[in-house]
Image (cartoon, rainbow, N blue to C red; front, side, top):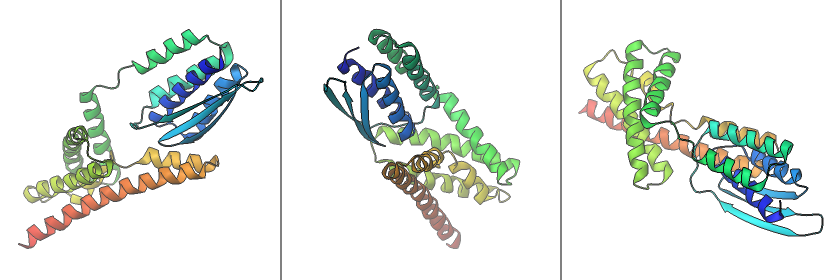
Amino acid sequence: MEVKQVVEVATKIGELLLSSGAEIYRVEDTMRRIGAAYKIEIESFVMPNGFSATGKTSDGKMITCVKRIKDRTVDLHKIELLNDLSRRIEAEKLSYDVIVKEIENIEKLPYFNFPLRILSAGIVAFSFTQLFEGTVLDAFFAFIITCVIYVLKEKIEKFGFFQFFEYFISGFLAAIFALFVNNFIWTVNIDKVIIGSIMILVPGIAITNAIKDALYGDIVSSLARLGEALYIATSIGVGVGFALTLGIGWVTL
């Protein structure tokens, strides 16, 4: 393949990896391996929200590509498929057309349907509520509240609000709903229900990736991811705290 095609393929796979929640070192290593498979040196500088990559041949020909990542999510299945594709490229030296076709197939893979995601979110809440020694009744209400929050969060995202506001509202609603339930069923433990309900909001993967990036020497990217995770956690906490403050005020009145 020509330098332009190799850089195009490497950056496209790197873009998909980064937008799917992959670690910084994985993105850089994948692009480097793809370039090495065709005797092209690819140097990249990757950040959580974008990267630049330069391909260089033995005769000095160079091509640089810059990518900006706006939408990020967590899709471990897509990361697995892209990893597998990159290893196949390295081992079999696939042609440009074959690689492009494989990338298109991966991009077209359907994400888990919305009802299944809602159910999964509820199961996570149910499990964590019991893990933190909540009763079955607590876990049941955490399941219901989380399903509602998941639907509302998806609706809020469509309005284009900034990310931290979404998490503030989600934390706020989790606490308000828990207080509302406790107002009618006093045996429900508010703290257990809230803990279970907000577990789907906690940026666990972001924190894990930040630690991995730090261990691999990507300090700037690690701090960026960790800062984002802390902002999200703070937004959730402020939302819950604000709701509990209002709830205490209502009880006082």
